[in-house]
Image (cartoon, rainbow, N blue to C red; front, side, top):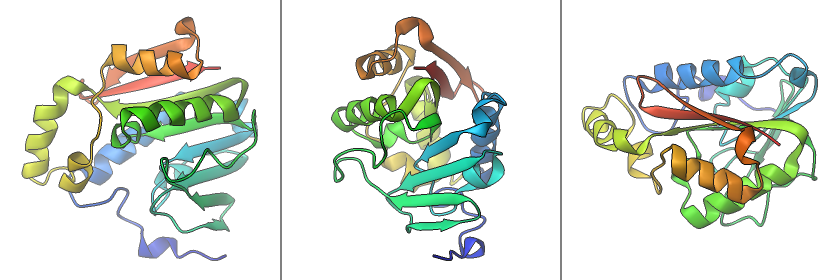
Length: 203
Protein backbone atom coordinates (compact mmCIF):
# COMPACT_ATOMS: atom_id res chain seq x y z
CA UNK A 1 0.00 0.00 0.00
CA UNK A 2 1.36 3.42 -0.93
CA UNK A 3 1.44 6.18 1.66
CA UNK A 4 1.80 9.90 1.09
CA UNK A 5 4.48 10.95 3.55
CA UNK A 6 4.41 14.52 2.33
CA UNK A 7 0.80 15.02 3.46
CA UNK A 8 1.90 14.34 7.06
CA UNK A 9 5.41 15.74 6.90
CA UNK A 10 6.09 18.62 9.25
CA UNK A 11 3.82 17.33 12.02
CA UNK A 12 5.82 14.89 14.12
CA UNK A 13 3.18 14.84 16.87
CA UNK A 14 -0.53 15.57 17.15
CA UNK A 15 -1.65 19.11 17.83
CA UNK A 16 0.41 22.25 17.35
CA UNK A 17 3.24 23.87 19.24
CA UNK A 18 6.15 26.06 18.22
CA UNK A 19 8.69 23.68 19.78
CA UNK A 20 7.01 20.35 18.98
CA UNK A 21 9.10 19.37 15.98
CA UNK A 22 12.32 20.60 17.58
CA UNK A 23 11.73 18.55 20.75
CA UNK A 24 10.69 15.50 18.72
CA UNK A 25 13.96 15.71 16.79
CA UNK A 26 15.93 15.91 20.05
CA UNK A 27 14.13 12.79 21.37
CA UNK A 28 14.80 10.92 18.14
CA UNK A 29 18.48 11.92 18.09
CA UNK A 30 18.95 10.98 21.74
CA UNK A 31 17.33 7.58 21.21
CA UNK A 32 19.28 6.93 18.03
CA UNK A 33 22.58 7.61 19.82
CA UNK A 34 21.82 4.73 22.21
CA UNK A 35 21.53 2.14 19.41
CA UNK A 36 24.71 0.22 18.63
CA UNK A 37 25.81 -0.77 15.14
CA UNK A 38 25.23 -4.50 15.61
CA UNK A 39 21.58 -3.99 16.56
CA UNK A 40 21.01 -2.02 13.35
CA UNK A 41 21.43 -5.23 11.37
CA UNK A 42 18.25 -6.58 12.98
CA UNK A 43 14.69 -5.38 13.60
CA UNK A 44 13.45 -2.17 15.19
CA UNK A 45 9.93 -1.54 16.52
CA UNK A 46 8.85 2.04 17.25
CA UNK A 47 5.71 2.06 19.43
CA UNK A 48 3.65 5.21 18.91
CA UNK A 49 5.42 6.03 15.65
CA UNK A 50 2.77 8.59 14.63
CA UNK A 51 1.06 9.29 11.32
CA UNK A 52 4.40 10.70 10.12
CA UNK A 53 6.97 8.13 11.39
CA UNK A 54 9.84 10.59 11.80
CA UNK A 55 12.06 8.36 13.93
CA UNK A 56 11.69 5.37 11.61
CA UNK A 57 12.47 7.53 8.58
CA UNK A 58 15.49 9.15 10.21
CA UNK A 59 17.21 6.10 11.73
CA UNK A 60 19.36 3.58 9.88
CA UNK A 61 18.10 0.01 10.44
CA UNK A 62 17.84 -3.16 8.37
CA UNK A 63 14.14 -3.80 9.20
CA UNK A 64 11.84 -1.13 10.60
CA UNK A 65 8.37 -1.59 12.09
CA UNK A 66 5.96 0.83 13.73
CA UNK A 67 2.59 0.80 15.48
CA UNK A 68 0.29 3.69 16.36
CA UNK A 69 -3.43 4.17 16.99
CA UNK A 70 -3.46 7.10 14.55
CA UNK A 71 -1.59 5.39 11.71
CA UNK A 72 -2.87 3.78 8.57
CA UNK A 73 -1.50 0.30 7.92
CA UNK A 74 1.05 0.25 5.12
CA UNK A 75 4.45 -0.97 4.02
CA UNK A 76 6.61 1.54 2.22
CA UNK A 77 10.21 2.83 2.18
CA UNK A 78 11.29 -0.29 4.09
CA UNK A 79 8.89 0.51 6.94
CA UNK A 80 5.97 -1.69 7.99
CA UNK A 81 3.24 0.11 9.98
CA UNK A 82 0.31 -1.43 11.86
CA UNK A 83 -2.66 0.36 13.45
CA UNK A 84 -2.71 -0.56 17.13
CA UNK A 85 -4.04 0.76 20.44
CA UNK A 86 -3.17 -0.71 23.82
CA UNK A 87 -6.37 -1.41 25.73
CA UNK A 88 -8.32 -2.22 22.58
CA UNK A 89 -5.89 -4.79 21.18
CA UNK A 90 -4.89 -7.88 23.15
CA UNK A 91 -1.14 -7.73 22.75
CA UNK A 92 1.57 -6.58 20.38
CA UNK A 93 0.99 -8.26 17.00
CA UNK A 94 4.43 -9.85 16.82
CA UNK A 95 6.06 -13.14 17.79
CA UNK A 96 8.18 -13.53 20.95
CA UNK A 97 11.89 -12.66 20.69
CA UNK A 98 11.32 -10.84 17.38
CA UNK A 99 12.97 -7.42 17.82
CA UNK A 100 16.51 -6.26 18.56
CA UNK A 101 15.36 -2.77 19.61
CA UNK A 102 11.99 -1.41 20.77
CA UNK A 103 11.50 2.34 21.20
CA UNK A 104 8.74 4.24 23.02
CA UNK A 105 9.40 7.94 22.55
CA UNK A 106 7.04 10.17 24.61
CA UNK A 107 4.37 7.44 24.56
CA UNK A 108 4.10 5.67 27.92
CA UNK A 109 2.69 8.76 29.68
CA UNK A 110 -0.36 8.56 27.39
CA UNK A 111 -1.27 5.10 28.74
CA UNK A 112 -2.93 4.46 32.10
CA UNK A 113 -1.03 2.44 34.70
CA UNK A 114 -2.75 -0.90 34.02
CA UNK A 115 -2.21 -0.74 30.26
CA UNK A 116 1.30 0.70 30.67
CA UNK A 117 2.29 -2.38 32.66
CA UNK A 118 0.67 -4.63 30.04
CA UNK A 119 2.48 -2.78 27.27
CA UNK A 120 5.88 -3.10 28.94
CA UNK A 121 5.31 -6.81 29.53
CA UNK A 122 4.54 -7.12 25.82
CA UNK A 123 7.70 -5.20 24.99
CA UNK A 124 9.65 -7.67 27.09
CA UNK A 125 7.98 -10.57 25.28
CA UNK A 126 8.78 -9.38 21.74
CA UNK A 127 12.39 -8.41 22.53
CA UNK A 128 15.13 -10.90 21.77
CA UNK A 129 17.39 -11.93 24.66
CA UNK A 130 20.01 -9.19 24.75
CA UNK A 131 17.64 -6.83 22.96
CA UNK A 132 17.09 -3.31 24.26
CA UNK A 133 14.18 -0.99 24.90
CA UNK A 134 14.72 2.77 24.68
CA UNK A 135 12.01 4.85 26.33
CA UNK A 136 11.47 8.56 26.92
CA UNK A 137 8.82 10.24 29.07
CA UNK A 138 8.37 13.61 30.80
CA UNK A 139 9.45 13.66 34.44
CA UNK A 140 6.69 14.27 36.97
CA UNK A 141 8.23 17.39 38.52
CA UNK A 142 8.17 19.07 35.09
CA UNK A 143 4.39 18.75 34.75
CA UNK A 144 3.67 22.35 35.85
CA UNK A 145 6.24 23.69 33.37
CA UNK A 146 4.84 21.55 30.54
CA UNK A 147 1.29 22.72 31.29
CA UNK A 148 2.45 26.33 31.12
CA UNK A 149 4.31 25.71 27.86
CA UNK A 150 1.18 24.13 26.38
CA UNK A 151 -0.91 27.19 27.35
CA UNK A 152 1.62 29.33 25.52
CA UNK A 153 1.39 26.92 22.54
CA UNK A 154 5.09 26.19 22.72
CA UNK A 155 4.17 22.51 22.91
CA UNK A 156 0.97 20.74 21.92
CA UNK A 157 -1.89 21.18 24.44
CA UNK A 158 -3.52 18.11 22.88
CA UNK A 159 -0.53 15.97 23.74
CA UNK A 160 -0.09 17.34 27.28
CA UNK A 161 -3.78 17.13 28.20
CA UNK A 162 -3.84 13.44 27.27
CA UNK A 163 -1.17 12.47 29.79
CA UNK A 164 -2.60 9.70 31.97
CA UNK A 165 0.40 8.98 34.19
CA UNK A 166 3.34 10.97 35.55
CA UNK A 167 6.73 9.34 35.93
CA UNK A 168 9.89 9.69 37.93
CA UNK A 169 12.88 7.34 37.94
CA UNK A 170 11.44 5.24 40.77
CA UNK A 171 8.02 4.69 39.15
CA UNK A 172 9.52 3.97 35.75
CA UNK A 173 12.02 1.53 37.23
CA UNK A 174 9.25 -0.28 39.14
CA UNK A 175 7.14 -0.70 36.02
CA UNK A 176 10.10 -1.97 34.00
CA UNK A 177 10.99 -4.47 36.72
CA UNK A 178 7.33 -5.59 36.84
CA UNK A 179 7.56 -6.24 33.10
CA UNK A 180 10.45 -8.65 33.68
CA UNK A 181 13.55 -6.51 33.20
CA UNK A 182 16.31 -6.99 35.77
CA UNK A 183 17.13 -4.11 38.09
CA UNK A 184 20.79 -3.86 37.08
CA UNK A 185 19.83 -3.78 33.37
CA UNK A 186 17.82 -0.55 33.74
CA UNK A 187 19.68 2.71 33.06
CA UNK A 188 17.70 5.96 33.47
CA UNK A 189 18.89 9.55 32.93
CA UNK A 190 17.35 12.98 32.37
CA UNK A 191 17.62 15.13 29.24
CA UNK A 192 16.04 18.23 27.66
CA UNK A 193 17.02 20.44 30.62
CA UNK A 194 15.84 17.82 33.11
CA UNK A 195 12.26 17.86 31.79
CA UNK A 196 12.36 14.30 30.47
CA UNK A 197 13.61 10.84 31.40
CA UNK A 198 15.33 8.49 29.00
CA UNK A 199 15.75 4.80 29.80
CA UNK A 200 17.89 2.19 28.08
CA UNK A 201 17.06 -1.31 29.26
CA UNK A 202 18.48 -4.66 28.18
CA UNK A 203 16.53 -7.91 28.28
